[in-house]
Amino acid sequence: MRTIAIKRKKLIDEIKRSQNEELLDELYLFIQRENQLEEVYQLSDEQKNAISIARKQIADGKFYKLSEKTDKIK
Image (cartoon, rainbow, N blue to C red; front, side, top):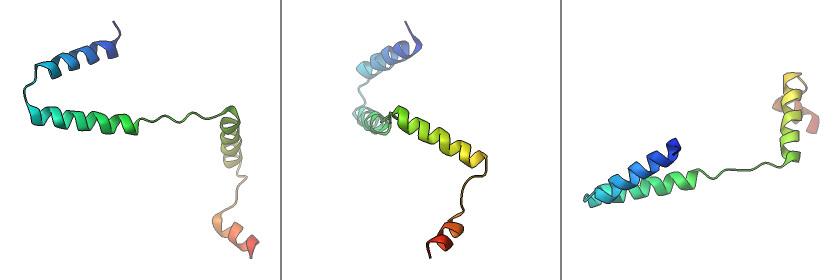
């Protein structure tokens, strides 16, 4: 059994044995919040490529400071 599966089983076993309603409420809220925060964003290949290009431009010094861009707009 994988580590995460073992941890999940142990946690479920402990939850089943618990009679502490307040603890169960808090645990439920905690897990619910964590699951909502774990939304994973999947980038398309085009987005990944754009990020790679931007990182290379920054590394090569090919970028403008905000003040330089503001002056060009005026």
